[in-house]
Length: 94
Image (cartoon, rainbow, N blue to C red):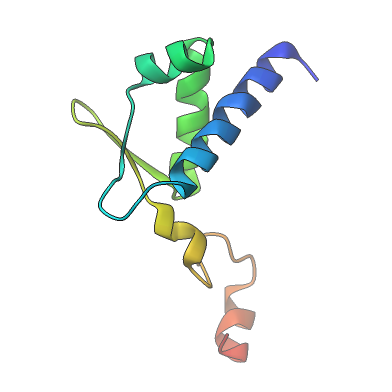
């Protein structure tokens, strides 16, 4: 594993744990710069991790406003964007 992959994984893991630990009503995360300083990694590495988390539905990034977490995503039974066989999901009614 390359060093950059380990750093990206470090940022991703930290953010997932941070999102899971948020209390109701809290959803704004630190800025990329603050996260980079906290984790001793570059902003580009933090940005890469936040982009993946945004694609997975855990974050929303609003330019000029911040990074907002969606901890309830872990509680969803089904997510159409992650279900590979949507027709099977409809047939089984799960």
